[in-house]
Image 1 (cartoon, rainbow, N blue to C red):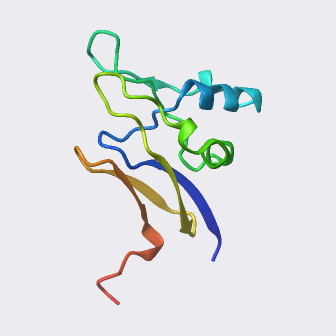
Image 2 (image 1 turned 180 degrees about the vertical axis):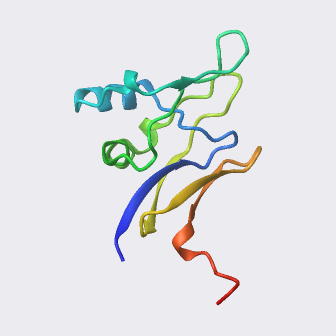
Image 3 (image 1 turned 30 degrees about the vertical axis):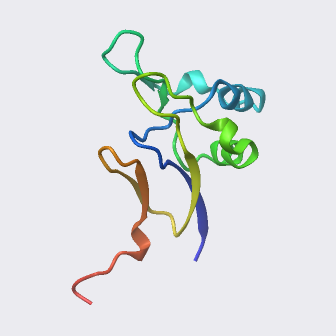
Length: 117
């Protein structure tokens, strides 16, 4: 079965919180990050940005693998520093399960059990 890589944030709060270095890395390699929406909090100064880049985008995965911890968005008073990681799935289906207050987890739905079987 085909394998793919997916980016997730294991830090409390979750979200795709990239460092300025990661955003620059992506731009230098021709990713138009401005084309993706940015989610910010409803507090003075926001608490992001949290990018809405597809978590399986090959260039995003390459960025996280190349920069390691340098890709993590910093703590900013509202959220902790990101802990971006790459998870490998089999098949082409996944979802990001955000655990309130406990980071995110990638769920590879090709490994789910069919109760009818």
